[in-house]
Length: 127
Image (cartoon, rainbow, N blue to C red; front, side, top):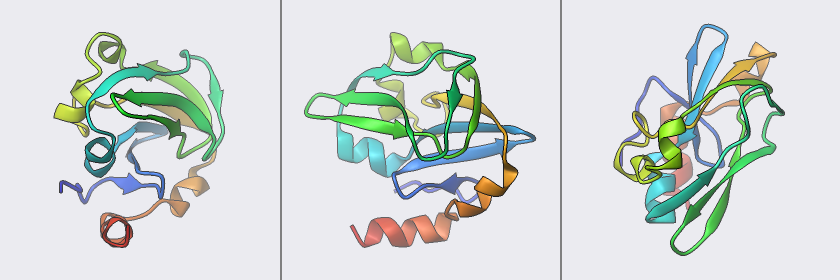
């Protein structure tokens, strides 16, 4: 199981990479493994506003559909358009080519609620 130490995580299995006032968002290696083969990803449009831990998209796999939750509040400034035609990128490289959204966050304090890699590891070991 790949859990990069430089990232932050949610209890709902999203990862967050902070770069200045921007948060890059995707789902974890654990999440993509649990979902199985991802066939479609629905994301909000750029310019949309999202709220912390509210659904902001959905991920459809062969056997199930799962919500994507926003780890922070803010404005979506970029989408990974590659996922429209290659949703399997999330299965192949969840922390790289499989990123989903970039959000300009409005409250840096919300980042403090995210899990460290060690805390996330303990969370998934308990599932």
